[in-house]
Image (cartoon, rainbow, N blue to C red; front, side):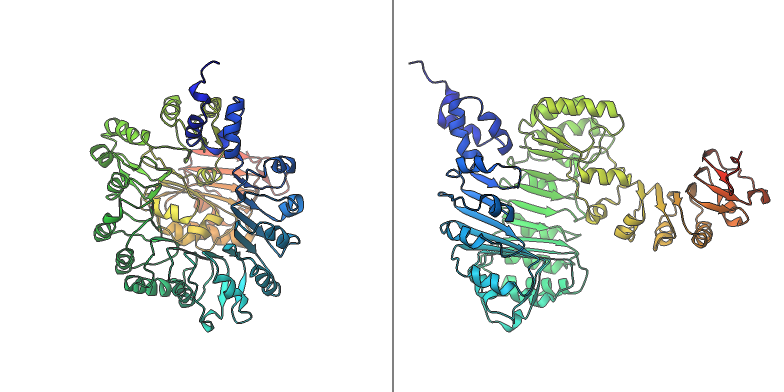
Length: 605
């Protein structure tokens, strides 16, 4: 009998499989019969059912291998009669008390149960809670878009007493303070809201969880209620209210004072997760308090903190770090600092600041640090990459599975060649929606080397507004972040259909930026007001008018045009221009796309 090849030994294959991304395992299972036998149980260990993605026959054949199963209402229709003998965890998402759900859960009493409900009618809630009380294996509950009235039924709180994890997402509490229930089993609590809710009532809920280890608090409401919550939380944590507490995540419009930040860090005996993207400052004494926990910490998010002094120390002192987000890091600090010890880092969101005078010396050293990381997904904003950068990624990031965004935004042909090179190595190339959003805004960054996963939203823009030099915006973006100021803005392009609220203030706050206006189809009254307001801006350099009827007897439009260097007319209808003797001495570039007079009889020469 010939000796067995080492790559056919199950022990070796299991070791190899531990480093394979899940989506690569099915392909590897086709190598040989031995590989198939070893990898198939790993492929089917966890299944997230999606209607139409997995066939019921395949699930039926491999159901004995499935240990972690996530399903929705469509699964109960398609495969609800199946039984999974070795299942350990069952997650069900439903918008109602679905027919067959109770029976399916009853058939799997040994699986830890995780339920998600969204948009339940208030009248249906008591019935659902009463039925779930039967299942002693319920471990976590996620409630989306629900109004929970604790005064209506005690079954709500009886159910929560059994949970280890509770997530309230866009769900409001009422009447909780009239209950004396304590949730001694809850270890992880998520409070996610975009509306003003009673911060003290939220705090009361957290106080009822004495063994809490993890708090996730997300709020996009700028009310005083967030202040009330964190003021009380920072006071109670150092007093030992939650002795096992070791993970905190705070995101959104949350104002946290320096002394409250210190109290929170001081009150945690051991820190595993410290995601405080809500804070805009992280002072040296905060780092002094955090430093003893760097040996055990796994996640840090200080992406809004205006500092780059601490990033290198964290990366070189945190061996257990898996996810790290910070505003920026100085490339010189990376080059001169200690090697990074977080070799298992899975997610890095940071901007590298490089001095142009030393970029050719520092950049290779920065790349050398990046080479030490294990990267599975690399998403970035639009860049000007070449084949050299692609070959570096292929050589050093062997586990790279997905790349998103524009590889070379300046040359379409080069971009296609770079994508083809990655796809030849089995790497998925996607057009990242978030990247496209940034590209639509026309944002340019300096310096050009940025290793970062862009997160769409005003928080990311707020963090990097000092880097933005060219900005292209419309009425939608004006509503989203029109109150921000961009100190180094050089060029501002605004597309509008009328005199948008806040437009005048936003332009006035950026007088040194060359202004380029694109106006389309405003009402006659709106035009006159808009021209008059724009006359107040001496930085207006170009005007693009689309689908507009212009009355040439209104002199404000021609006064405006005398200041321009560039003028574009698209589908323009003009009346009364021959009554004006205005000359436009500064215009150097003019575009006329199908301009006509009022009756459309002839083109304007």
